[in-house]
Length: 141
Image (cartoon, rainbow, N blue to C red; front, side):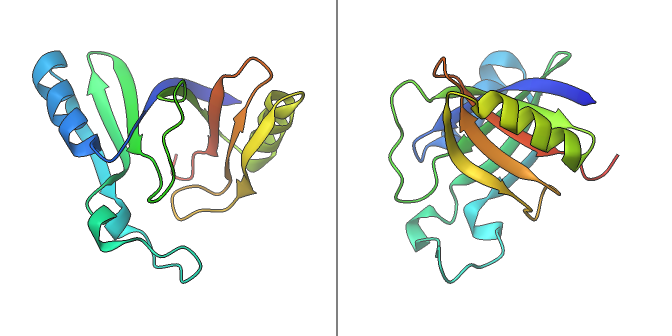
């Protein structure tokens, strides 16, 4: 079952600044913030030193709502129109696959489904309407 959806903001290397703004302007509470420097090392995709403090993933609480945020992956450009997307959290990998396949129909796969250190199964698609979706399986519930 789909457990929920959240707004997901993508910033261009200034995610830490955005988090501080949303804390101040919206009274957001930072529930989690991980940087690219905290990722397990991957020799095929090394994180440049200047990007180690960029936001890999932030989870903020604004009132009763969740807001997610990350910087673009180091050395990847931010595409205009992709600053806000939607994160879908599912309860099982099977459901993640189903949602991913349906949303990618007629659209474009941005990141193939794969296991990550934060999710049993995660992927990104842009649907046929140009909306970016991040689909992940909740691993600790």
